[in-house]
Image (cartoon, rainbow, N blue to C red):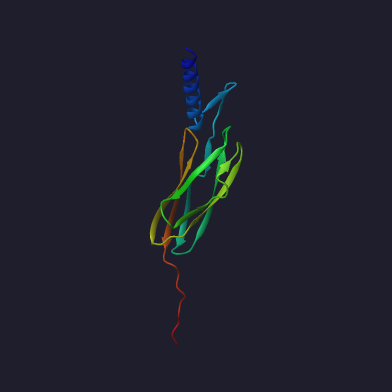
Length: 145
């Protein structure tokens, strides 16, 4: 009988380790302990920009949760959009400014996205959208006499 008790205890401990390791929320004194990511703004329109000229904008990642927020992965939809993130880990209440550099390669309307994969159990993937209209770079005018 003692053998089965140990097996049950071992299984219960393994299940608890699995649940905590998966980032599910813990509830202590009626408060859910979980990370929660907030991205502001969610969208920026850069207006008119020149092709092959870098433009930067800032977005803020904020952990409004009660547990450590892990930024697991940051991706963009194009090599022309490069997010610069510093830490990748935010304690409860902390924020980080992310600078996004955009260098359009084609003339016309551009819609690019930056995806942040986190351990937020409700919103594991947050998306920032960048819009711009790119125009040809201006050429210096030559005068012929």
